[in-house]
Image (cartoon, rainbow, N blue to C red; front, side, top):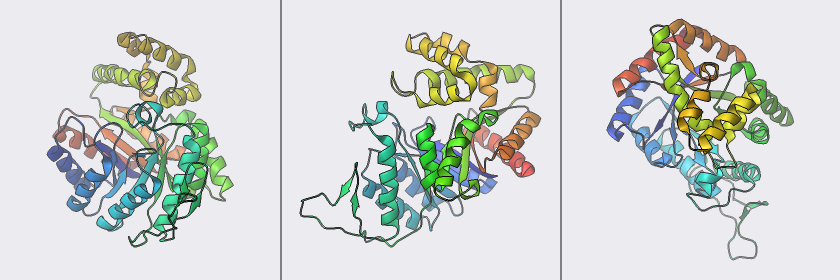
Length: 347
């Protein structure tokens, strides 16, 4: 398996500390660094800086959200970063959710599946150096009846792998059909059919197999010395998982909750969400079980994490995206280094 991590330029660490973390992670042998955007700092600015500070590391947008830029602006950004990094850029796209797209950017969230398909078609046309002409339900380029004519970007053509962040069945099928990689989360290997059945359906539709798709899955990695420390780590993680199940998205739309529900925790996920939405955050955290935490993370003793990595590999994960725990950059790097050694041992 390849190894990856994700950073947020607007996280608690200073920008200088984050850059040091990425540069040291490259020295440790990390393969890919994704930069998140969400409702914080933009990803492309950070990626451009990191392209100048790194030499080997692949750099990806994890993710650029639909609706925050036009498809051609996405293509311009991706092509610029690909050339700046000597071909090390990966374009990660995601639909996000109505809370961010509508609540923050003021753009309608409706029809994200169609918008994603058309965006991929347009950016791929730009990457190939073609004159950009698109007649779709979401985008019309040039504007019909206007004065514009099809144009091609003056940036030299470049091949940029496209990754889609997807959780729902239809967007998973689209990922299998059109993407080079899948950026997944909330992943339970034992319940992976909830994802892979839809990915495989999309792959079959485009005449491809799983070997043609980079399955990039992420999880927190944290090492416990003994059972007492493990219990404390799991309890701490429950608060974060309760937020994902109850607070992410809008009151009506929570893709993380839906993903856990499809993997066998429909009742628990609904209870957590209800408690969170009622304002009782402590009760929501108490409703998260140990199993829900351990099944979707790489938390445990070194032997537990090693065995879990084997399960991920055998299930079909080709890139493991590690979120190393630690109270400082040094501590996170230590955790990351131990995890990288285990991934190499597992193969």
